Image (cartoon, rainbow, N blue to C red):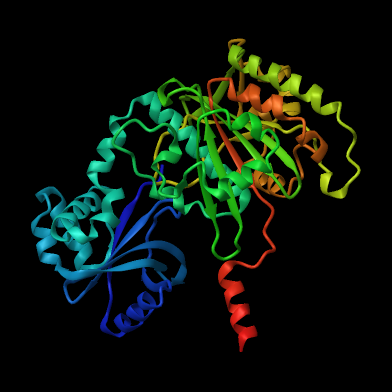
Length: 447
């Protein structure tokens, strides 16, 4: 599980000017540094040091190789401290157990240890209160608030976060905004509560997207939170709502409903946790045991919905072509651990419902003691995160336009299960000029 860390960046005199120019122009800055390992799905906080003083704090990402033993460190969103802070003062406030390793990094540059990073964050927050907002999400206080949540609450937040990350991946939008999650003082109602990008349900953009969603009349009768994620470069956006009728600690999991408005296609995913079993080889075995009474009830509900979908008129439009018109998928994955800093998708198996029906009656799933279990080996094949994202993003699988119009009862049944339902709407890309573009055109005409 990838976690946030920090990197001490020592800039030589001949690079400081270039760095400051990038900061002023809000451009990313790249610096070759000694090769290091850090997951690209977790935050990397860069502490920029010049002449023995901390001058800037930014977010970094490990880039491509920059030569023998070197990696490119890309620094973005760098903020200048109102007053530089002496590295000596930072070191003097560190616990003795962390001081030696941190001093070495600030003298020669490099990646901090997990505990060293945490200690540096607390030291800087005391010495430079103006940096507290930036470093708040990496503070020990934030970690304590997360740990105070019950195990059940953290499990449900982890599933909701995974559903949100999946939807963002399918939509082709950055998952980085999810790293800004901060726990509220009280018990959150859903994962969206901790995101600064959350909008009120009355927001015109949210309402407009929901009105174009088949089944909206049912959804709006349930309590929900909504968020809009948007790409500044492409103007693509994704509206996500989390609807539920139970408190976080009473929910029984999460379902994802993804709607592509361009192709009028629904895809629905149910998440199921696999158990971990230790083997003599030391390589863990992940398995999902059968029978599962709750899953059987859920599949019965899916089968009833399929009967309704099959009664729809056959598709005759190229935009409605699907490799499979069955919108239901299961994702089996190791039990999720709630870590809001990691925006990587959890590895797992996406299995189409039709394939699952064959698999659960296949003799190959019988274990050595006669029990039934699904594993990576006996499942034979599956969609991974990348392949699933590919086929869903362009609506190669899912409901046809005519089928999507009759899903209101299916959505109602899903909302009544006691799970949180993450509903993601990818609207058609607007061809209308943005306000700023329109102003430029009007100015040109006036001239």
